Length: 376
Ligand code: SF4
Ligand code: SF4
Ligand code: F3S
Image (tube, rainbow, N blue to C red):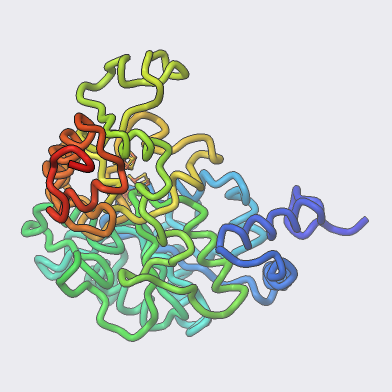
């Protein structure tokens, strides 16, 4: 009997997985054989080194919770993890040796997955592990050394990409992301290795695994947006695909949490549909990710589907510049127009009251049409 390519998966299921991966990456089905060949080839299994800095480990847990492929498939059959702090048995000197061996012996071949922000205050001592010549090795030292020798750096999670939660009030530790600390300032990595940002707090496992599989298949990073994120996963706003969009356009906004008159019967309420959450602080209009389509936890649900707001966790501004999370965003981009949530709320309120169609709301927001009744 033929040995399954990925343990526990038949050839048929393996090809189904490759097909799902192609879809996940926005590729046509004609790429399935290429993906299968790349994953099959033992020599193509890229060594992966995973280093953590100022992190809560949520990103690692998110990826380890992946169901398809499972964590075991991921670790044993698809990728060649040389060190991962949460699942590797190695600790202490053995762990440091495993990291250094990968850096030295797999120069230019391994993918560095970096989780967590990098602090630079107090010589970087707020995040360190291991020592060399009696001196502690800081997260910045590891990023520089492991990053310079890697084929690519995958900044995993908001903390690694832009500083995330540790960057809030960062004057204490000087927390930074790898390549950006937000929209305008420089990041912690100054070397020349290409960096891809897999943002999110945490990121969806598909975003990380899909990006690594793409790299494995094509030997290059996928197309990236202006913030270094793969367009295949971060190409549209949450608002573009949200199932509450019809409520938004109809001017139906939740004002009070738990109000049954703003919740659909499926959820125990009396409303015709679940109302839009923009007035409760939803950042969906300014947040780029495919959560409404991909969903989470084996595709069961996602933040807004679970009756919470989108907190904008994939954006460079997260966390500090989007907080307080449960208050309306100061500016939002709706219909390609930058404006404030208050203006939208006011305009939509007027528009709804006078029966203005959604297609005119953009013009109302910019003042191209007055807020009188349509046709007046
Ligand atoms: Fe934790 Fe979020 Fe930072 Fe990941 S991005 S380490 S989940 S705080
Ligand atoms: Fe959905 Fe939020 Fe957009 Fe409302 S504002 S439609 S809840 S993404
Ligand atoms: Fe994050 Fe918003 Fe998705 S909070 S998980 S980008 S719905």
